[in-house]
Amino acid sequence: MQILDDGGISRDATAPVIISASRSTDIPAFFGDWFMHRLDRGYAAWENPWNRQKYYVSFARTRALAFWSKNPAPFLKFLPLLDEKKIPYYFLLTLNDYVDEGLEPRIPDLSNRVETFIALSKIVGEGRVVWRFDPLILADTLSVDDLLSRVERIGSLLRHHTRRMVISFIDIAKYSRVCRNLRNERVTGIREFTRDEMHEFCSGLQGMSADWDLSISACGEAEDLSEFGIRRGQCISGELLKEEFPDDRMLMEFLGEPAPADRAGGKNVPFRHLKDPGQRGPCGCIASKDIGQYSTCMHLCRYCYANAGAHEVEEHYRAYLEQAGRGVFPESIAGTREGI
Image 1 (cartoon, rainbow, N blue to C red):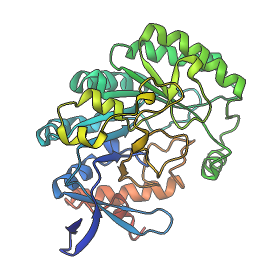
Image 2 (tube, rainbow, N blue to C red; image 1 turned 180 degrees about the vertical axis):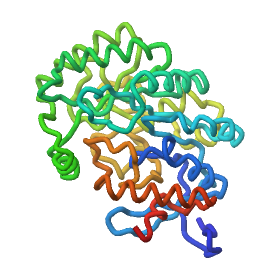
Image 3 (cartoon, rainbow, N blue to C red; image 1 turned 30 degrees about the vertical axis):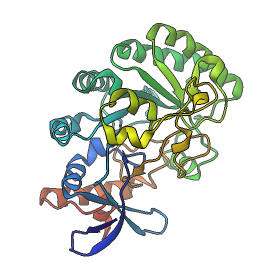
């Protein structure tokens, strides 16, 4: 479809039904003002991180928003405005405990994050807040048993405030940027799971989930973990949208019905006919358009694949705050990087 950009120029734009905000950066934590401004404007832009080509995204047909965050507290003030727009939304809220390892240096302390999770759940409902423990990491000082203990401590606090848990196992070797960031931050001893350790962890998690009554899935994981009651992951989830927003006719028409063989879960992923072609093969997410940008997240997690380096992120965010202070919100989050 065609839109008029901020300069009054006609542009070709995609018009997705589902917006992802965002796998690449924490929009609720850092760019809430930008998001709400662009939502009011009716479109946003996304820049390809490799060639800087700009693509336009219209919200004209948007019927669902999926927010990814480690700290949605700054965004809570916008929820009444979102509700007025009558666009269904839910949160994928990552709540880890790597305090002792110092892997997430700029996020609030654990108790505050738990409080925010519970507060958000009470506002929007437990079905619309998904708990992500992501990524799962082992270290010289962090064993499978240690990690299970941390997960159990958090899960016991969240058990009545969510219905779904998503886990993912860290991939270090596959991502050169992760290796480089860990090396630049002088982080040592972090490692991936062996297959036996993965199964040991999932077996322990299975015992906990029986008490928590949570649906658990594994994000982007090729290993079949169904013997532990863990499904293949679908973070942008047709099932969740069907359950939480059944009265949204346009959204239900887009989703359609999963194939009969998919409804049982297990090895199959529901709504496979809508699989997002832009994601990894094992990813079960349905089609959406992400509007975030690499190298913009000020959490500066040591293991992050989306940040090229702390200096670039800090300079970008400084420029963003300067422009936001003047009421200027560029078409893309990356727009404030010009001149850095």
